[in-house]
Image (cartoon, rainbow, N blue to C red; front, side, top):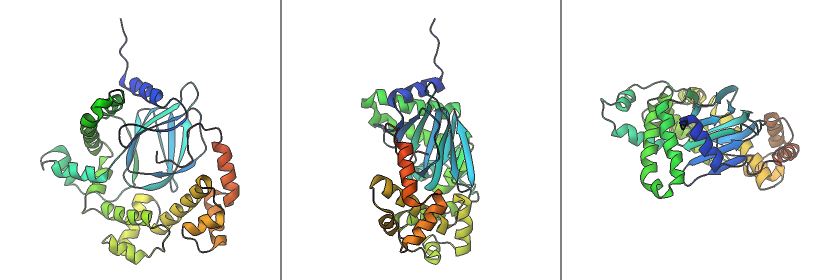
Length: 317
């Protein structure tokens, strides 16, 4: 008599098959990626995007500012806004590698789903309850319904002819499950145009695309339609940092990427991300990463030299 495979074991097996070696893997389904790692890692800096990251095997920790979020098998990390974070795999081995599936979330799709729900529906009723701005990252257990939808989405990779027709429907279901899950209020609040979270999201989007430019808080507040004090308060509630700290971290992370990937010198990297003074760039870089720029880059390259397909900078949370 055959033994039925549990959903959590099946999704782990599928991820393992589609991600046969260490690293990050894009798939034929838009914004669906896999990550595999067969050993624990040091912390690496990542640009986290709005997404749901579900761990099928192993464990990981994500640090935002001074806060660390732990999640492991059959838990997921929901990120509702672009955030610069540190990521570390804390549970992995050759026999039982860390396996994770990540689905990017389009906040516009979340807003469209909320708009389509009737006032009496589950999502529609929840939409009426506006909550104060909270952290843009949260961890929750995977419900059977969420796991089932994610498993069906991953299964489509073995039926590529069905992806175009079925993947959008399953993505919509996953969004619905997330919205009505334990931490869905964060995602919902980010999608509502009238909320402080949405306004802060506009400010974050501007900084992300103009990080090399001087930052004027009064301009940023005006663009987000908030007072400067309100912007500061809600920005910190969501990102665990001030707008200035957020911009500085983006600058330093991008400078590090430029030196690692494009192999440019520290002075050029600092200038390209907005620093007028090489000494100030070196000082702030050393304070953030614990080592002078080129020494740090050399050590990061050495750490990554054994990785087969992994990168120092990934969008995977």
